[in-house]
Amino acid sequence: MTNPKPNAGGQLPKMSFPKLGGGTIDVGGPRDRYTLLVIYRGKHCGRCKKYLAILEGLKSDWEDAGFDVFAVSADSAAKAQADVDEFSWSFSVGYDLTEPQMRALGVYVSDPLSPQEADRRFAEPAVFCVRPDGVVQIVCLSNGPAARPDLNELLDGMKFNIANDRPARGMA
Image (tube, rainbow, N blue to C red; front, side):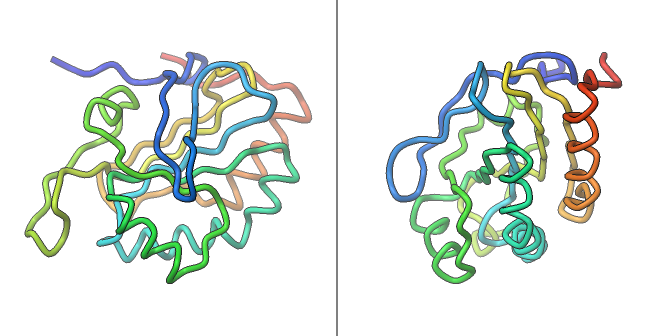
């Protein structure tokens, strides 16, 4: 049996994640701005740190283009906070992504290879660009840490889509 996943042109499921610093990150449904939602593997992933460093460097460009920027993992609050403290990420970071949420997002789920890697199942990388009406414009799912969209290219493409009122493409 396959799990449903958000498709381009469809609605991102409504869900909330606890946010470091308090409150929640709420996605899905209508919003005032576009959403860039990055799902990352967690503290154990060195490639995630590189990717999120690029995101940090582009954060203001994404915000200027009309996006709220969020990164979420299955890590505990303590692990997520340790990364924010070490890498000084200024975008909103969510934690405790649950397995049902992973399934609802359609992301690949992995078991840790050892207790040193992670203490729970975790999501493989994914990136969602969501319009203010809650419709998924872009969805990129990866089954491993080495394949992720180029954030500069993605931003350029999204600016074009916004400026030209382009619909989602590649709908199922």
